[in-house]
Structures are given as structure tokens and as C-alpha cells.
Length: 392
Image 1 (cartoon, rainbow, N blue to C red):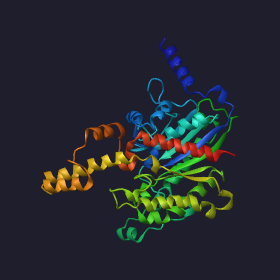
Image 2: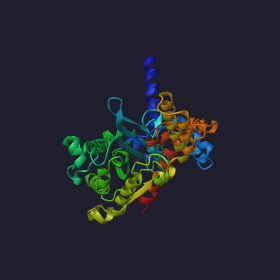
Image 3: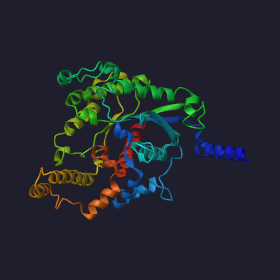
Image 4: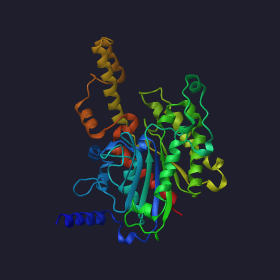
């Protein structure tokens, strides 16, 4: 009897994840998503509910939650994900659902992207996602045609020159994983149950979302535009897909006008965003002729929650000042003066600020505050841009 029940469970699991019959004869559309920590994704599922607080985002809840209020699992979109968890790399795969971010309770851009592509596309979908935190395009994802990494004078002086074997390592890992996934029908069937060899697949698009580590290094910013042009060209060349639709996700921490913010003024976010936009603008002028066209920038800045960021900085700065008062490094009068300078009132969060923080945030500012409102909307924007580029 126990053996019989085991087989029933296996059969039911296969029915749950198998490809719908009407989609089994259509080519599998493959989208590659790659980048660093914000492509991994920090938005915890508990922040979904906060979308109901904003009339502009409340309607999205009907599209990402089922009738029981649980996050939707895609019908006809699958994902395989190579990332770092714990002490080493790991590979996960299933239908697109919550759990393909930093951990099993979080999402990145893939969730909104997968949901809205699933609704818009008749063919079955596979997302191949590779993302590791704390990586740069200048070193870690350096594309082959960019040539050897040339360290800055400061790096040479400090002895902080990357080892040659680390240069381009994650570019190679990304491409290895893509090739291994697409190797043959058997490798695809491990990710997409019900995939048939006769279906074939179509490389349908690539999304790159990365930037913080390059932004923190002015030497990297100076070469980012050229490196990104090489990256797009090399990816297309290696995948033998010269016109593969390619999206560059633009760093949007601090919104669309970082210089207007009162906090973290020392970071060259505006300069870095310009380098990213310039890569897309210049691509067709610099890339070899066969690889031109169908490259788009999608800005994550409009989806960054500036009011939530204000609360983040209020918590962070007043917390530090309170510590300094306790340590005798700041007087209570100085504390009050700093609070007045930044418009922080008494230095305590109001009841409304605390409620907003508790409902909306689940991570740090450089991780878009771990807000589902940000990641779902940006994922949807990526899907809409990909669909627009895919039209004949």
C-alpha cells in the first residue's frame, strides 16, 4: 500500500508540473536573465500586501495573487536558476513562482517578468537565470572581447589587482550554464517536464540587471559603456543569435534623479546611470554590423520607492546619532539639531512611518529596500519592453 501511495504522489507531481497539451507542440521560448544581487532579488513575499495601500499598484495584486491570496505559480513558464546560496553555488528549477530570489521566500525581477510573459505569450516559456551578488562587469562578468582587465593606478599601488583567473569568471559561468541547459532534449526535460525534442526552442531575449559594484568604482564607470557594448556583442555571438532582443536594466537606486536626494551624496549614481544609457545609445554605432539592433534600456528608477527610502535613512541616521549620544560622542542638543536639519522631527518614526516600513521593506536600500512593489513593477516593465522588441 505504501508503494502504491508513493507512485500516486509521483504521478500527481508530474501532472502538476507537466507542460499543458496545447503548448507541447509549440517551440519553447527561452529568456536569459543575468546580473548581480538585484537580479537575484530581495523582495520578501510578506511585502506583497503593501501593494494594496497604493491605488496605482493595488490592481496588480489581482494579477499576482490567486483567489486564496497566495502568490501565483505560472501555468506555462518554467525557470532554472544558478546562484550562490550558503557556501556555494546551487541550481534550482520549477515553474516560475516565489522563491527564486535571495531565498525561498523572496523574488527578483524574474517573478513579474515570468508572470506577465506567461499571460502574453502562447508558447511555453523557460527563464534561465544566473545571478551572484557583489559582482562587476569590469572584472567578474568581463566579456572576452573587452580584453584583459587593466587595473587602475590605485589598484596597483594597493596591491589590489584581480587575479587573471577571476577576470570574466562569471561571464564564463553564465554561458556554461546556458549551454548546459540548452544542450539537448534531455537537459531541457530536466527543467521543463513534457518538453519534446520535436518542439525545439527559440532564444527569445536577454535581460541584464546589474551595476552597484561598478558604480562604486570610478575606474569601472569609465569603462562601463565600452564593456557593456562588448558584453552584448559577445553574448549574441556565442549564442549564435545576432539579433537577440537585449535589455539593459538601468540602476534605479535613488530614483531617476539621484542628485536630488539628501542622502549618500558621495555615490556617483548619476554618472553610472549615464554610462549605462550611453551603452545602449552607442551600441549600433560600435558593434559589428551583424550584431546591431534590438537593444533597449529599461530604467528601474521609476519603480524605486523614494518615500520608503526616506524612512530608511531616518531609521539609519537617527539610530547612529542615538548610539553616539549614548557613547558621549554627541550631545542631546546636537542630536536635536541634526534631526531638525534633516526634517526628522523628534527622531522617532511616526506610527504611519513604522507601519509603512513594516509592510513595505525587507532589505537594504541598495537592494531596492526589498520591496515587492518595486520588483513586481520592474519585472512587468521588462516583460512589456521584451514584448515590444519581439514584434515583427
